[in-house]
Amino acid sequence: MSALILALVAGAVVGLALGALGGGGSVLTVPALIYLLGFTPAAAITAGLIIVTVTSLIALYAHARTGNVRWRAGALFVAAGLLPAAAAGALAGRLPQPVLTAAFAAVAALAAVKMLRPGRAATGPAAGEARPAKAVGAGAGLGALTGLLGVGGGFLVVPALVALLAFEMQAAVGTGLLVISANSLASLATRGTTTAGIDWTVIGPFTGAAILGAWDGKRLAARVSGTLLQRTFAGVLLAAAAFMLIDVLA
View 1: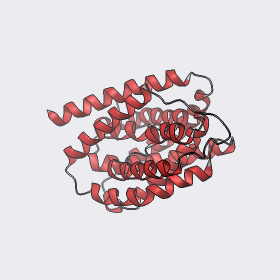
View 2: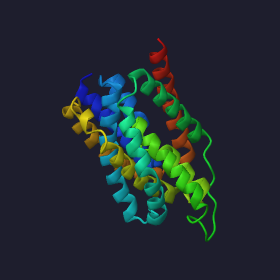
View 3: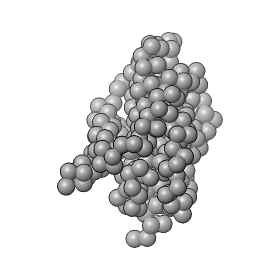
């Protein structure tokens, strides 16, 4: 199968995940770039950030139009995560490739566990305003994760918004896309030297397919059970994590 077709198929799956679940794009993008398209781990992380940033911004626009973005709470997460994302991004270029791959596999497995055990949203007039200190701590941790491993953190920020700030799921997805976009941009700002080895003839089609998939994912989320989507996605993540760990240990 040609690289172009692989890029289009993988991009569509990534977009569906971002549009439907508000996260998970990076934890699919990086393994796809490494094992399907031949990128090195460092180049895949940088390319993944580019793809997820562009796709997340498009998906954010779609959710903002329907009022699913809580800008104030999202800004709190973003502000807490920007400096950690930039610092971790600078550190990532100095780490050995097997370490990055193993760490990414561990994060993918964690994401799968979070998807298999989703949190429950609280309700009430204070939704979106609770526990700001915990929100800041979570934002800083997610920012560092983004910078180090090139993951936007949506698979963690969406459950955090539900559990810590009492968001309903749709608002958590929309606001999570705001956090993903900002964290990814901050991490990209520290990775200028790692873009030299990126094959833009692959990244372009991958990104285009992901953008189209994100629009479809938003529509899919309105029609299919959220639990079914999360469990399907978790299964894919567990398989990817196992494959990456086997590759590192082999």
